[in-house]
Length: 154
Image 1 (cartoon, rainbow, N blue to C red):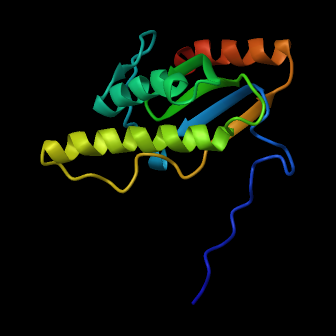
Image 2 (tube, rainbow, N blue to C red):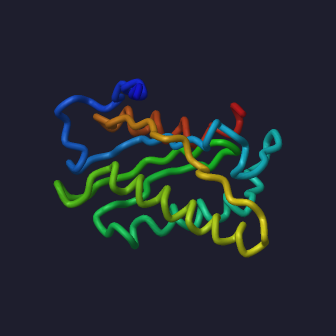
């Protein structure tokens, strides 16, 4: 039996992702499909049912993880950009927060689809996510601007 190819990790080897700090994240839809809503030039996202679930679950992250705060975020048709803040060292790791968030979104959306007698796909999320450890105030401000301006670049 042939094993699947090993994926190269995009994480910093040896870095503790449960350390307090700011983290810029990009989480993409499965196959980068436009499933979170639609976006017309100069307008805000008109969320789909999955987009609404995603926004609700994103807002609930600090309820599920009291040592995590949301700094800035934008939901786009096929991805989410956000800045998460871990406020205390070694309480929760970024991968735990992201995994829980993705699972809650998919579970809620799947329930909606099944209740409407619609087929539910195996996932709505790309397998992994992209993260950047924000190292200083200048970089933080740059990521905030990027998030705010993202719809204008769409």
